[in-house]
Image (cartoon, rainbow, N blue to C red; front, side):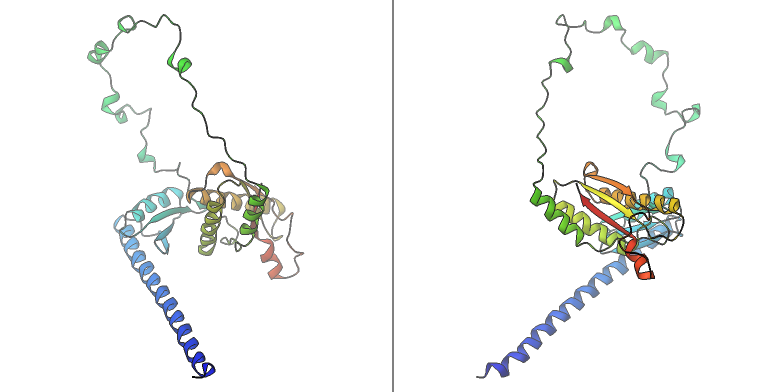
Length: 281
């Protein structure tokens, strides 16, 4: 049997099966995303949050609203949808702060009617409180539990080797550019995907510390571009922390338009200068 006659059809068949499998996998993922998006939008509508945008990447949802408080509330709703793995909230300026919640979730200290019943004391509860004289006498030893407790041994943090830092830097350089919505610190869908990729690289190199550096093009005023670069670097840092990266390993800094990658002569040059870089420390 002549191998030159047999091999070409076999190779074509194998390649065809591989392509078909890839198409089927992509189609299945798109079906999941479409179904979960529909379910999430239905849940938001039922909660009275019709103006919220939902984007699914696999089973991970990005929820965007006009305010941070609304985004956080909507993310909680979407996270409760069956099949959704994570739901991250985005406000008008990027990732929503977890410290911002609707005002009704807190209790005003100045409003006596809002004081919980268990915090209100009366004469009976005062009578039930033991006086200092009735408490146990202090120990004659003059020492406290804090003084006698032996400090726990903390495991020293291992410093990464030079080779480990260099390998981590090489892996981070290979990551595509992180993109943002024009003139804002809000990550695009592709930008959020790339940050997830960066989080995976940092997980592979758990000892290294990284500085996140933001850069802009030269369109606009230098002061505006400086602040924009800082906000974008901070947005990437916050997103990495949300994805599980230890905040102590990360710092951020903005350089504005002061350190262009290329001399801007074309629109493509401007695009190259808009970037976020990871520098291993």
